[in-house]
Length: 598
Image (cartoon, rainbow, N blue to C red; front, side):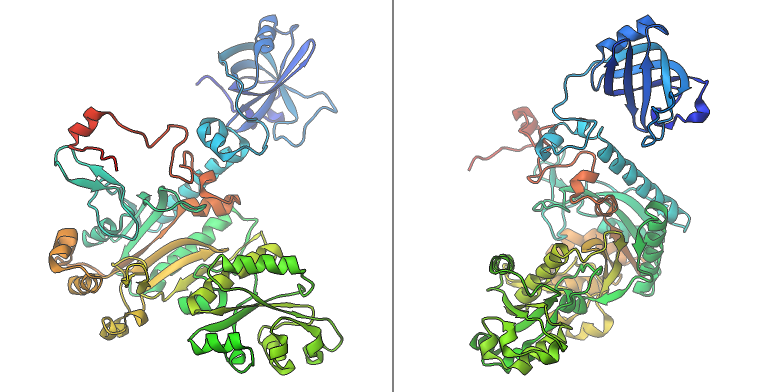
């Protein structure tokens, strides 16, 4: 190695030692005769001092150095002169007096500052990602990611899991998103698919007798990008045989996440034990299957009260099978007209017709003292004081609070009001940033109705085991069939999804048929998979926590792009390597492909 020590590891106990350091010039300060350089590597920085009286040759090297030059130095560790210590740095009590120096490589002026956390356009950061990764924040994120993955491996190995890699080039099968396809040179007209997840492969490993498997798995999905999505992502893929019930897996996951927080982020608080919340309850209370439980503001159904009012809008919506739900924003009765209009536009962005508000004026005596003239709302004149009081009590509201109501189709109401709850939680700073509120959401529906396709689709994927007692009504009432499925959520993020799997080949075929696959299609797409089930498939289940989202949450970042070394931008483009890109005609010819221009 060119270096004897890392820059950031030098301390007072190293005083008197001769060391060799190598890294990048973080800062250079020329004080005339003395030149000071902060030398940076992965561990941090060390101050190195060039004095011509110690070495004229080394001093001349320092004179030519600029930011981001790669520099190697040898020198003696000395205490900093009294009064010049920098206690903000771990190495701030020492400096290295340089006796030898060599520029290993020069550097052009970077397109942005490396040594300070200034705002930089993301497209510039991604184009020069190798420079962006030198910055302290990004370096810390990469090291955090390494610690998380190392912890997962050690935790699972200690509990009898074995790590097995599965193929990247597999068969295209329907799993919820579009596949990335890879043409085969040796089989003209045929394609591999990159795995959206190792779903069938990990189930085959259970049939193969591995019993407890995990993998740090790369997954590929051609879907629209957003802050917590990438075309390629990494998940902790886990599968277990001979599981009797969901709790066999949830218990391991609760232990894993609790131990991870103790190890990686001991300063954060978590709720123990993790709550188990039914899917229907989650939608009813929070309008989301990934609720943020760090604050209350639960949604309450006011449909029965609304139906008794003289407000024609309420009456029509209720008569058409709609519902009226609300949340209470404490202390917000004084919101201005422009603030209320902003919230109105917010819910309209999620498909709601609009937002109805009730500002409850202040007075002595609490809600019982509420009079019609104290309520500010366009609907107040169509309601009695008792009806407004009943709404307020159901929402645990007090005088000075603001009731926010959405009315319409149930799905639209839940979605729009759930997003408004999240938005108000952020605006009012209700969520404790030091709290990580983990929970399990369970009992998802097995199927979801697609308005676009006018057919039933798997809520998660077609390999999920239905509840046995719901099987008799699978074809007659598919919307009521529950799945033995579960998610791990935290602070409004879905961190993992999993299920007990179908291990009976006839039940699996029944699910495929219900989803619209003909027998020949089932054999063509899943034949090898189903054949394996004929050779003693054990009961099994699994889960797949998303590593990118977990690290994003722990790092306090807003997008997974900031915890992935080389991510794509929001258009799935690699700005650094300029991919995707056209390929040569002879490459296409080898693959028996032709690009068609529409």
